[in-house]
Amino acid sequence: MSDEILLSTFERLRARLLSMAGYLLHDDEEAQDVLQDAFCRLWTHYRGVDSSDEAEALSVTTVKNLSISGLRRHQREDSLHASVTEADDVSDSAGETRTREEQFRTVELLIKKHLTPLQENILHRRELHGEGIADIAADLNMSETAVRMHLSRARRTIRQLYQQTQKT
Image (tube, rainbow, N blue to C red; front, top):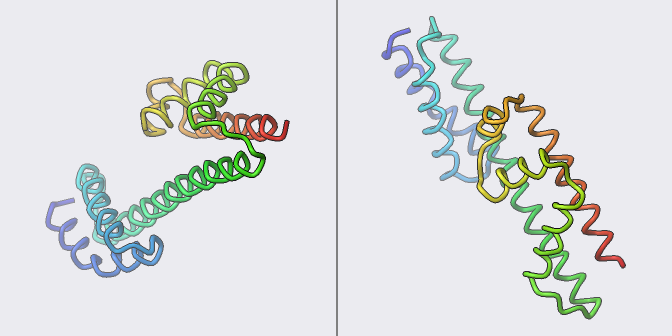
């Protein structure tokens, strides 16, 4: 596929793609970022596309998937913020004056005691270092699905154990 087909197809769809991303994300600036990211991704992989119909399908799918990823990222951040706020509320209502450092130390101990070395590695790389799932999977010679599964199980285990320690 030539550069012109990709450029013309993306330009023709730009308003529609921006509208779709804005609708999904409820944030115009983030929608613009998604469009730019989508174009960069398409630009590096456009050689396997033979027609404008195929370029259109890839563009729509890429923007939709990046928007959904952005939503998931925001939900994770909101969930993490809510759980930290909830933990603060629980400790305040119980009259405990545990500091954040103590809470983090508790979580670190739970991680070291109850997670497998693989889960601990994945959790640290994702949460502390901000590495992407694809990078972690490639480094560990695993599928992305397996990495997500280990990460989910690790988070769930730590969340449950932490909640149990707060009740006692």
